[in-house]
Length: 473
Image 1 (cartoon, rainbow, N blue to C red):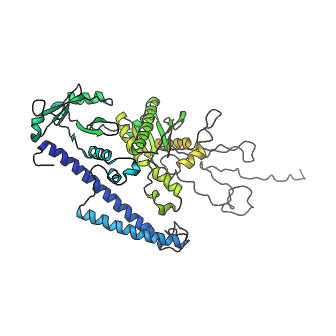
Image 2 (tube, rainbow, N blue to C red):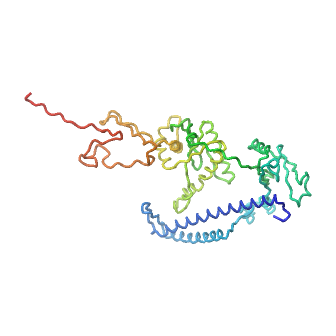
């Protein structure tokens, strides 16, 4: 920024710089928290004997398997402590490390041969990445932006600083570009905003690889009142089980019964960041369209968080599982889904993920299987997620015993009602013999063979014995 720069452009540059600085500060806090957690875990494992097993009840972590591994972790501990001291010093001094144009592109300058680029081509990409041509919107101004103005027919004009006013080709120190712009996505909404002179922010950037210029328009939408949870679940819910390569969805009615067929939306998380983001966005768009077709107003997902599970100290040498957790897009999926669902007026319900996969496969996969439908464990887990979001128990009732047994037909093992606490936990074990083959006179219920079931009636009739008939009669 130079002295002749106008206040309008100076404000845009200052705001963008402050936003970048705030983002870097949040990154410093996240790194400091992560480093402290890693140091705490390694110190706890180093204090344990080699080969010691973990004990959750006693709060004891697992020790390292060999002396070589212990030595390698001790060296890593010192490296992490050095990184922590540097990060804390930068935080205390208010110092951040920001590369305008991107750190990856800056490092590429020293490896042009491996990237197959010449210095001139790299310099062009570097200048395009560092170029700043953006302006925030202003409500009440013509077309919602005085600095970069785009009319309804797509004409672009830029308000030049005073030092460049001699280059203007339009009145009031403006420069009109020859090219016009068209917004394919949300073009009608953009036209409504500029017609009402509401604020619209613009950013102009150059794509060197394609040789094209692009304009990005953005604005802040008014907050939409959230739909009450009871009203959202009145038409059922679309339950979603998130996986590392696809979304398993199933529509459930208000009573928790699956409707229709399970849906699967696949995505590929390999490749560049833009490719991964496009894959996630495409899968979520298909999910939202399916929700609209079903007539539901809510989507149920699991409240997953694998931030702590990505640590190598928690899962040890299981690199495959740690790599799976690292690429699992839980945060990206939830953030993107919440933002996209808000545009469609769909409510997102996050439920506790405990036992959803296990109980779904145990109680719902086999009953939902038929000759023409083969649900997977993930489809059954989606049913469990939806039932939990609707307030219904996941575990199904067990069938009564057949009539040919000695105890005859009994009651069903009904689920506890929603207001009962701990109803979603595993059933507690009842002490004493569980079968009738136990030796008589033993067990906790040996003195009272009339075991009571939940209806508080005797499960067995009292035994009786007929007296012998007197021979004198």
